[in-house]
Amino acid sequence: MIRVGYGYDVHRLVEGRALWLGGVRIEHTLGLLGHSDADVLIHAVCDALLGAAGMRDIGYHFPDTAGEYEGIDSKILLEKTVALIASKGWRVGNIDATVAAQRPKLSPHIPAMQQTLARVMGVEEDCVSVKATTTERLGFEGREEGISASCVCLIERD
Image (tube, rainbow, N blue to C red; front, side, top):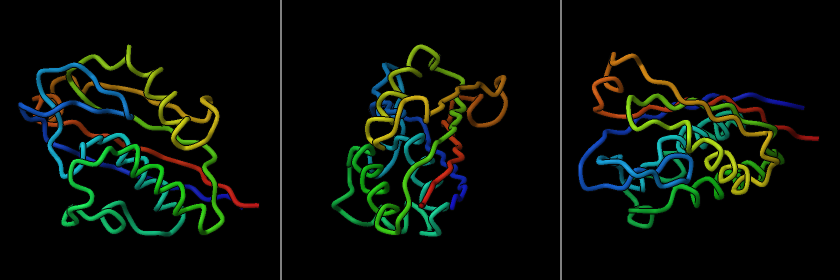
């Protein structure tokens, strides 16, 4: 049996925060604002996986009102998400994600993101696709006010 899921997340860019995307720290003058490390890509992946398993969303399982998640590394949230879907008999098949950001240029960081995400989820690297796009200076991403990410996934059960 297979299921598909979709996830989407947005975080605001601010000064004084590190920029984490796909579990990789990227040098930039701005970082993403959030209760955790605000890794918008991992959050979209978590939402896709949880949605595919019919298990609600990341905010339900890891609320931003819980002190235990303040400043948490989103890779830990992804590990916990994979364990949550496994508790229902599901395993990750593949993910296909897109990050929308005007700057910084993300292409050089994509191989590290794919390696990191694959390792955390316990899948082969070729099961993880990460793409990056700009919005041609349109919208909040284009104005460099924030970064968004979307993800589709396939989960499997025997």
